[in-house]
Image 1 (cartoon, rainbow, N blue to C red):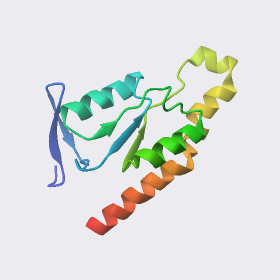
Image 2: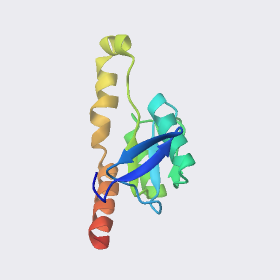
Image 3: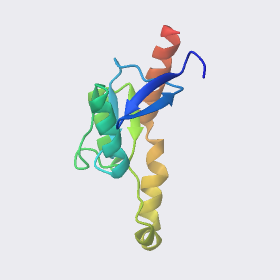
Length: 126
């Protein structure tokens, strides 16, 4: 374990973290109502991070225009996509929707803008 590692306590358990998030960054969590999203919200709230956790009505992963607008308006530094289509039986019936959610949605252009802003800020600070 090197000096870059840090111990975090989540759910009363210690975890060694190789990477630490900067607390002065705004985090947008998409899919915050799902199982993974709820855990991110819980941990970020416990650790006192600034985060935005919009409802599915406010951030439908299949509505690219809505997601672009949300990202433009909130200007997050970090976007965590927890949205997923995980109804396996239904995915066999509607594979296009499953691909849209789990495949195409990760290519939303404004997400890349948030990533680029984060990397530029990191380079300036480095």
